[in-house]
Image 1 (tube, rainbow, N blue to C red):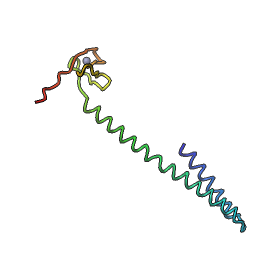
Image 2 (image 1 turned 90 degrees about the horizontal axis):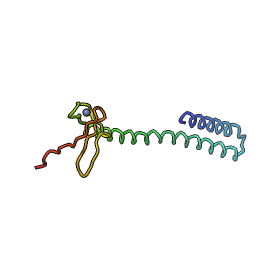
Image 3 (image 1 turned 120 degrees about the vertical axis):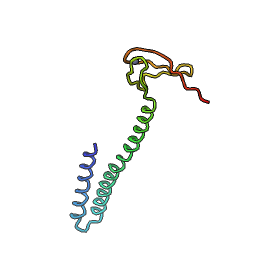
Image 4 (image 1 turned 180 degrees about the horizontal axis):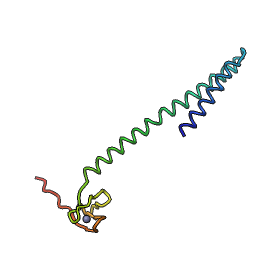
Length: 113
Ligand SMILES: [Zn+2]
């Protein structure tokens, strides 16, 4: 996608230069050339903006994986590492459904005092 945008920008910029060089005093041709070059610059600007957006989603993904690490636990029956999908919240209590040994049990929360 990005390569295509750069190619279009390069073609637009090329035609822009050609229009300006070959204008021979015709100001309308110069204006068309300038508009083409602005369009090329705008396309390159857009491709420069997009990576920043993916960067923010990258940070969000890192935050999510941090939460997963916090919740990482081991099955008390077989010792298999449990991920978020193995946890189920029922009536305010956390239940573990172990995908390795099939054990189902409730996590006793530590008293909060
Ligand atoms: Zn297990």
